[in-house]
Image 1 (cartoon, helix red, strand yellow):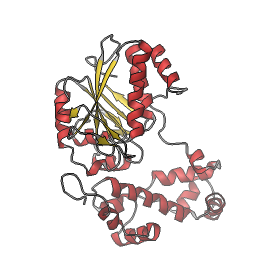
Image 2: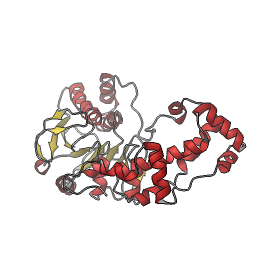
Image 3: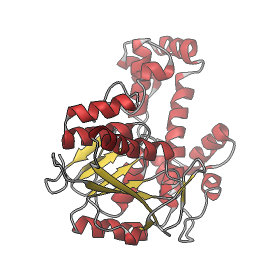
Image 4: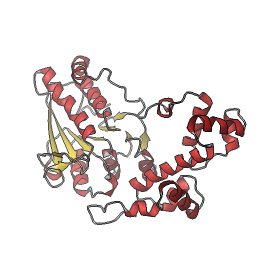
Length: 334
């Protein structure tokens, strides 16, 4: 739950600052700020006063190329009840020192700290999530978990833990803000806002981020779905084809037939692609050494990993990093 000093039902206007990071996610930002505007409209008074801030105090460009005007620099963001970091792509490549300083100062003054999309990464790097539960966009979860093994990270839509609130992003930002509005001002106003958004159901925090495996793959065979789930759960130490088949009481030949029938490839090839997809995410979103990435994805040698990567994506894993932009501090990702 929220800290009593910041949240809980109150007639007072709450001041919320959105801290925009370069290439922030527009949909996550819009989904977070629009419920506040609509809550004011539904109540007929200013329940929430919101503002936007950037590192240089100039317009900040979202990942879709749209610029958003801001009120000033991070260092000038004061007297805020909430500070919400709006992240997006390449979050790990940017220099967040100015933002970190502003967040730490805000926390000392009693502000609740939040994040949408990859903004959780910034809070984690600043040491502001220690002892709190948190979540982040599913694509960035493996990388953040690898870099911050001590954090209590989950894959929920959003997570509210006292005076920290984090969200996976996308339209889930609206669910998190609607939950906050409901706690502040009750279900009637929250429902009015949801109706205005054509948002027919306020999703619970613990609901899944990703579409059910059955829907994503477009298949319903229970044994095949169970094997695919096992593959996704066992990347660092891949299971053998025999172990996978035994887990659903099939022969290896029967399992191969299932994979070719529904997925058009062998279990081994599908499993390899799952491991390589995770490796690609880690390379793009973290500074982990390539050998560490390889081992985390079940490859026992750098050469085997590199060959499999080239066969799959057409270039070695090292070039994936070389093609990534340099950070604002001028230090390239390693």
